[in-house]
Length: 256
Image (cartoon, rainbow, N blue to C red; front, side):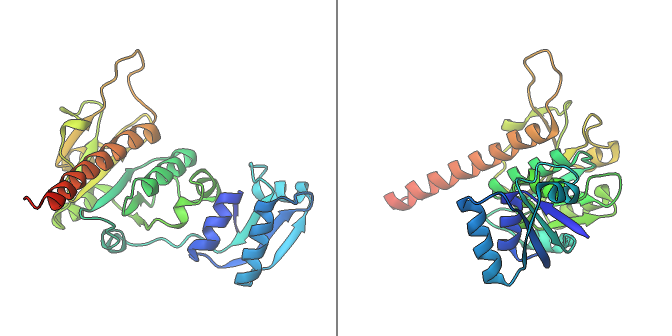
């Protein structure tokens, strides 16, 4: 059985309709408005609700911070690369490629930021990397339920496939020759992020069209991958919004 837990995670999973729900367990002692709304949503969707003790919920969630809600569901349904590329949400493609992120909390945080920043989807490897577990769903606040997530056998080959589709690939590397904010992201692009501590694999690094770095002005040489990813993702958002603002002003003034 697959468990997802936490109010936001279960709520978003119900909204996304990407999983089959067997039932949702809720703490007997909780009677607040958020759980009441979830009960109403479950009833509307025909999902059974069971009221359980805190101990029973702890056992189901492995004593994680479940907030009094644990759902029994089908496994996360992964997309393929075509689905991620085809889910283009804006003028330019914006794909996040993760080269072996192993910590589920980092994966969840990256997915939460990717969704907030308007990314089209996320690509993760099948092996030696975190999958979308209950912990990832909880940490992402349910964002993982809405994003197309592709599992691929080889990240280096996937980078090549993206390039063949005219998507520029931008690797984040501490030795990148240009700073992350010096590159113009107003193009179809994929941001490639490496594993904790190890960074990008050498072959993946060589395949990328650009390598960018984040200036480190203190004593610590690098940022956590989820923080570093957020920094660059929102630089992409900033640049694209700025360009959109200029275009809007031109439209208002009748100039080009």
